Length: 283
Image 1 (cartoon, rainbow, N blue to C red):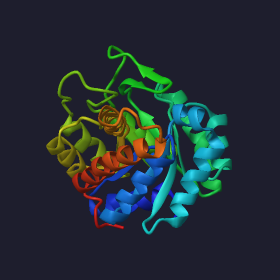
Image 2: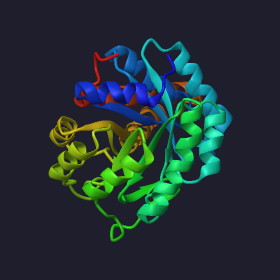
Image 3: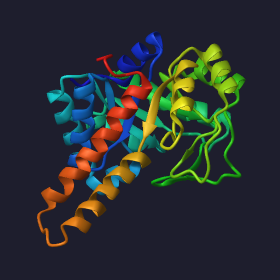
């Protein structure tokens, strides 16, 4: 069933687990996410980045997401990941997204607050949940790039001010993760997560989570992370499965035979994540 992000994450916040938000680009990825969610009885978030929307088209992404959610036996939210301008966010709302992110993290605090409030005013009026970001998460995700030197951890006091003034539903924070493939093992600032959670109380979001060790993820969840974004791990599983199949079957010309094992590989990764996040059995 199609639900709002707030419905999913308020429950996760209350019962201290995290919901996985998995980036989608095509039908097989959507199917892998939904099948994994149903097999683990887990709530889930299908999210589309600017790159995903540009690749597939907003109409296809929205139609795939809404169809999958309506047919699913578990609650599913359809989310815009890293929306960077008001018009793009409104486009996704008009196409039936139930959750949107307005990423004003590149701006100074006051401007980020004002941009977020403008989006919330419209989104909340039509029942759509809103995520914002405070602090700068390093790395690259589609069209959004933050140099490591410009990455900045979220200030707990600024987070409280931001949440109090905007009324945002959930907040992405910068605590040591990065988008893309890690060069070394990421070191999360657990004390910062704990302090921010104590001050704001709302669901917190961890971006750049692919490649973060399992024990670090579990600890972050125990301290108040309720939404965890995964993209790179799915890309790796997808492309590796395709390489493996093509090496063993060089004469194959049927794309279905290539994509089927890729979908299964992604599904296994997603199921594992759902157990780590604590969302399995929560639907």
